[in-house]
Length: 319
Image (tube, rainbow, N blue to C red; front, top):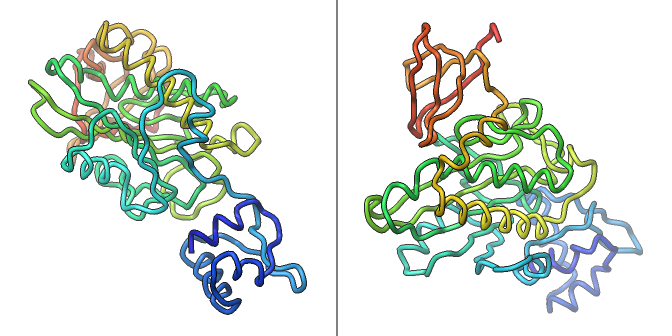
């Protein structure tokens, strides 16, 4: 089925006879595969008698060579999948199998994409970016302090390079444009964080998606904001470059070197918020973050700090 898709990805018409000859199957078999493409991947295909079959829009697939062509400097090796449960899950499997870090896991779609706190991450085929970077971390907990916030800054800068204006950050792991989610970050750790461990930096970016009824919050995409279709291979290359620069700086100076810059990019700085942890709720005003990336809130006139992967931050109704 995916061999057929790669023949059609140029967006031009192809006759059933030519497609069958290229695949070594009958025209009837081509027709069945086309129906599967539409049903499984939700890709509209035009069928015109006398002309053949055409994707409703040209399709750009992820390719390691294309990423390299857009890259400046080091290229991380990439494992690219047509379909997978989630790039983070595959990254964890690859670590267990002995894959040497650093490396990337990319996918055209995820069948079980995950966000924070177990939420589904909607992952249509070949529209967005599903990206996991695996790093080997040595030297203890200091190398992990504020790491997800540093990744957020790197993602924000990559999106700005494509003309996405008004992009900013929401503590701890969201990237927003006008309070609409455009990207999210999910870090997972295996090994001993006090010694040697591996960390998976999972990043999901809404790139060319223009419509979806499956997302339960306000969202936008790079294409919506920039007004043009985005080459996802180029986005991977720019994101790699942004991450390489910021991760190296983080190794040298720690998160404290990013604190002020992150606060300047925090869209909810100074806003009244509610911090949710399970059934518990804390109301306060965002003061900023500390040198380890914890959220600083003014609660009833007292400054308090909060950190943890299961916390959720929401604007209060009175903000």
